[in-house]
Length: 47
Image (cartoon, rainbow, N blue to C red):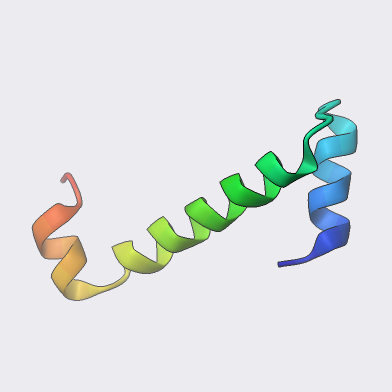
């Protein structure tokens, strides 16, 4: 994960807790990766 991107998002959105931005981006990445998995997509992604 790119620290400069996380810092920029936190700065432009006036977010003090940068760790929350980092966790949010990590969770989005996990969900995106899972949605590309055929088993996960076929069984858990809403269509």
